[in-house]
Image 1 (cartoon, rainbow, N blue to C red):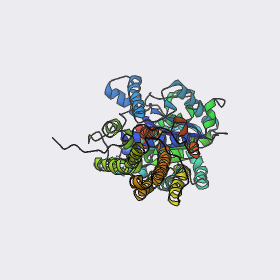
Image 2 (image 1 turned 180 degrees about the vertical axis):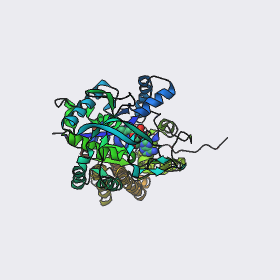
Image 3 (image 1 turned 90 degrees about the vertical axis):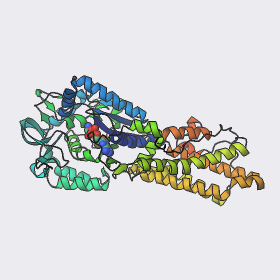
Image 4 (image 1 turned 180 degrees about the horizontal axis):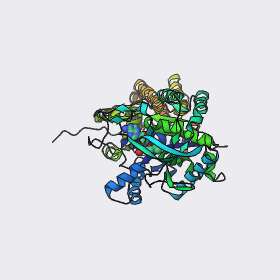
Length: 512
Ligand code: ME8
């Protein structure tokens, strides 16, 4: 049976335009989804938008439009951003869709039936910006001396009737989950933080609100709408048509990977498994939290005017240079800074020089000296075998990195082979062999073509558009681009198209 793989991005709030931070998590999830597809797995990749809650209601009011009209426009903008970044999602879920509302209510009912929800009254601190409740001892003093959430968000004292989820009952079960499945939450830093948070003790969680209307009504009590996080987390099930266990997608549960930002690790690794346990459902196999991007050393914020729309970067640098930079710059899971200088540097050194030149040099030698025809694969020298051996192990090597969400390490594995390829071409010097030993020149070029095919194949998840072009230039047909296809050596004699550069060098325009 084909292995299934279900991977998700967070569903993004529609209270503002998409920016590079949103694109980042989606690109990372896309790489994982594409990698599994190329491995022959049956993949379901979900993204979407989170459209309820007080924050969205207020943003719509500020814009003076009805909430539905407001969320329709911003959700469409997020979808457009996902398409522009070549995010290969299988479904785009919106929490205002009837299918989601139905599922979220079914999940609520299931949790309530288990006795894990009771009616009480909530009195305490709420930070609207984080859509999160905080206890007194979590608060810090703001710059003006007022109480703030640990994230710096302003808090308000809220008092209203509320349904509660018996989170306090789940402390031991959660700790057992973290202990028996250390891979459940990564990276280690997020794991340590969550374990210590849960060890401090969990209080029951307020899961409904009565002070605003823009949400999913609580089954059986229309005066309440669900807490936006209960609603939002349910998206991972509603896209699978929960509670219909006969639905074709139902088999994708439990999710293999929820990719999230570190700001929302707590919701995914504490609340979500607790809700699922109460509903008698399996918990996801893994939650992984990516780090935080700043821009030229500053936090992105509307007031600083430095919020970057990823589509603008793509316009200037090309999609794959941006995707590559984001995943290459910092070990995945860590924080990083987006600077023009480093983006240009990575593009010019690693893409244009290391990979682009290796490909261009090889293809132009084939064009010039072999009439553009793929030479035969013949007996290999020790050096040939060594290079091809390095290429052959890449899919497995990378699979274990992807499994750990070590996306940057996976790229580094490929770059080691690219560097080895460059050392090989320099050492073998096929341009010199042209005059001394034409047959050996052909052998060397064939080894290089096969090396480049392997490299381009494994890089497809990271840079789908340029690797598509590269594979076409290498004469690799569409059906020959999976990892399994790498086991079959391509026939000689194919005529390659005239070589064209894949990665142009970026030259900064001098100011006028
Ligand atoms: O939290 N650096 O939505 P959201 C890296 N609706 N990643 C960033 C980032 C940055 N500077 N800024 C945003 C929500 N992100 C909820 C999620 S899921 C059931 C509900 C990414 O629009 C990161 O993945 O605030 C973060 O977790 C997510 O965007 C937050 O998106």
